[in-house]
Structure formats: C-alpha cells, structure tokens
Image (tube, rainbow, N blue to C red; front, side, top):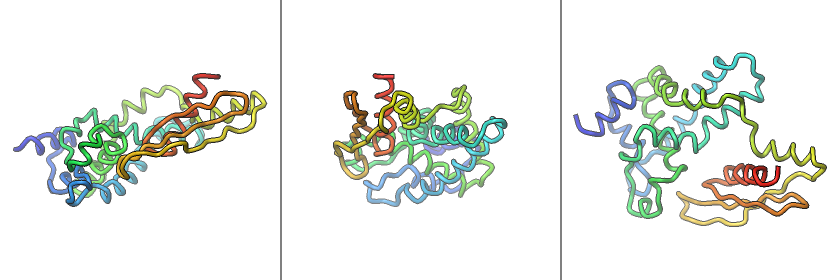
Length: 220
C-alpha cells in the first residue's frame, strides 16, 4: 500500500475503492489534469446535509435562525480549511507550478474546496454512510467547541448601529488582487462618525464579515 492509499484509509476510516476519484479531489486545475471542482460541487451539498442533520439533533430547542448561524460557520471555507489541515490534506495536494508559486497550498479557499471535494469522492466511492462518518468525526469538534450560537458579525454590527442611532454600515470593495484561483478582496466598512475599517479575504463575503468583526472589536 502506498503512502497516499494508506493516508486515505486512515482518514476515511475505510478502504477506498476508486483511487482515481480521490486523486482528482486533490488535483488543482493548474495542473492541466482532471481537477476537483465537480467533486467539490457535490461534496458541498453532502456536507451541508450532514451538518444540518447534526445541528438539528444536537440543539433540539434552538430556532432556525440560531441553527443557521451555527451552520454557516461550520460549512464556511475557513472551517473546511481547518479540517483539511487537521487531516493532513496539504501533503497530498497536486498543484501546478503557478498555483504553488501563488501559495495555493496555504490558501483557505483551495484547502476548503478540496476538503469538500474529498467528501464528494467518499460519497461516490463508498456511499452516504461513510461520508456521514467522515463528516461527523471531523466536524463534531468544531460543533461542540461553539458553546453558544454565534451571531454573524454583519448582523451584530447592524444591531450595534441601530442601538447607537447610526445609519446602517456601508461595505465597499476597495481592492482586488491575485490570480483568478486565489483572488484576494479588500473590503472597507464605514459607519458615519467612525474611522473606516478594512479587512482582506479570499471572497467578498468573507472580507465583509471580517471587516464587520474588526470594526466591532475596535469600537463596540
């Protein structure tokens, strides 16, 4: 058994069947080979279903809104990237030279997508029960570590503005840089009467969230 197959067996908790599926799940488009994006599309949906089921069972008294906050955090790109790092996925990523030079091995965006692609591969190769086992084992620590349902920073900032008689915050993309597969967005949030606060992330939505969080940490 080679190192990759041994890692897969340990990580999945079962003997993989079609190794080519898993190789594709960890292959970046910069290689010019069949890559992870279709598997990521599938894995994203499988992850969402299982995480939603876990939350529904674990927090029987919480309303939909609080469950949604928990759900969004658990399926976020950064959470998926954390799982990817924890299982040692970085060692087995297949990247082209340009992606390596651009830092894709450390990118939350790429790591998160490949973690979801891995779920897609498990689902196709071994079925929903094995995919559920993999997700429950690796996402449950994240679920249990969040003792209270977190309020989304953008919602928290809007409520803070209302409580302090301020107009709603304004978000603006103030910079974009990097190649298409590793684009970075800088978003600045402005509230009248306060200095603007900026944050950078791999997506506009994530940058807006980070900017709102930074603003609250600075001013609230």
